[in-house]
Image (tube, rainbow, N blue to C red; front, side):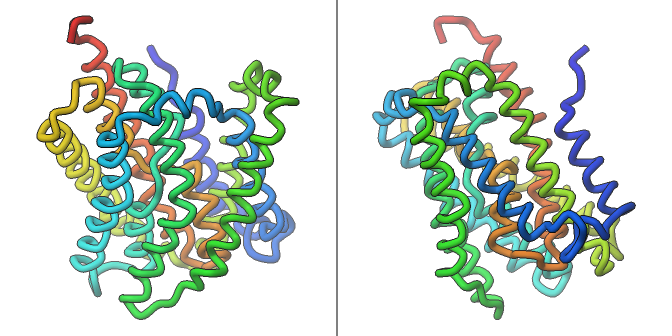
Length: 321
């Protein structure tokens, strides 16, 4: 029997600790979250840069039609679906949760799970590496741009220039620092990639904990059951719609099966690993940050379960397919 993912259990534990001990991780708390969060974000992206192979990325630069479909799915179809959700939920649910639903739709794709699932399903792995990495870089600009557009339309403001500057400072710069250190530490990083992955995930769990502490202290979760139900339903609908849309479009465009598999996994995923740090930088210590993160925290395990099932089905096809 496959052991449960400790990271998913850790997310639940981080939320529970925020409920029980919110003072330490809240603004002004003993953990100094303002500093710890920024350093944690930088560490995550420096590690990403250290383990990112540009040669593998370059191998997937061809097949521009496939890349265009994936990126348009991630940064156009998804956000348009998010705008529809904003319209349908106006005045019906908490504003922080509405922001979280759109934030989910505006996020870039994942890197590790998109590539891993594509490999398991015998898809086009170089193209998956290229699209997942490109999505992460484009997200630094397009995610806050979409948020600024959506929040501006609803009467809220987002200091777009400051947000992009912070993202470049705490995300992009550490990523390039990691790349610059690859000649010195790249071989070491690849030998210890599993341990680096653990450090990466533990840092994310710390960010999840501090993100929920302020929400607990300000009693944002007074309607917890309703908020969870709405988030779960929205996550299921969004994932189902995007899987169907990407699969149909990839068939209409005449892609080979391996390419359709790559498009399916890369264009339907949303990143928790980058989403939590980006939320901390974009929304700061907003009391409702826990609610903003709720949709992506539910979408993350859902996409892994559904993606794993689909990858298994694709993997069992005849070798000549």
